[in-house]
Length: 150
Image 1: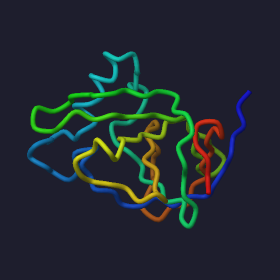
Image 2 (image 1 turned 90 degrees about the vertical axis):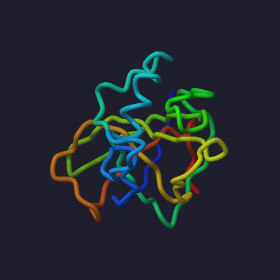
Image 3 (image 1 turned 180 degrees about the vertical axis):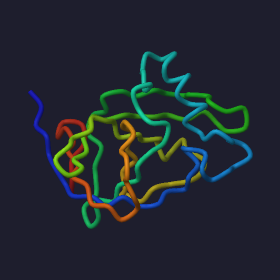
């Protein structure tokens, strides 16, 4: 039985590398476009989700990792970057009266070469949310056995 815990969050600007908006010549389509086929080979299908992340600040709260739903280790997704570990956690986002199922996307900081997030920001993958803008307030729910909020 899962216990869902909730927090309010604010959509904030990220680095734009995951989606390709940063126009980084190493990842012209974004890092997720390179990672997702490899994740699928590891039996994690993210095809229902938009190829980008929502950076959601839950400040002043922080999160603490308990037990990931999925953890993929030593994923070599780019010829120019070192292998990384990734974990994913169940979540859902409330936008008005509509809920969107998704996953927290967590590249492990100890294996990630750059673009770190503060401990008050979660990266979320979910389906496309029309009209979403920076500064929008959302309701976030997480499974307590996977992530705690402090």
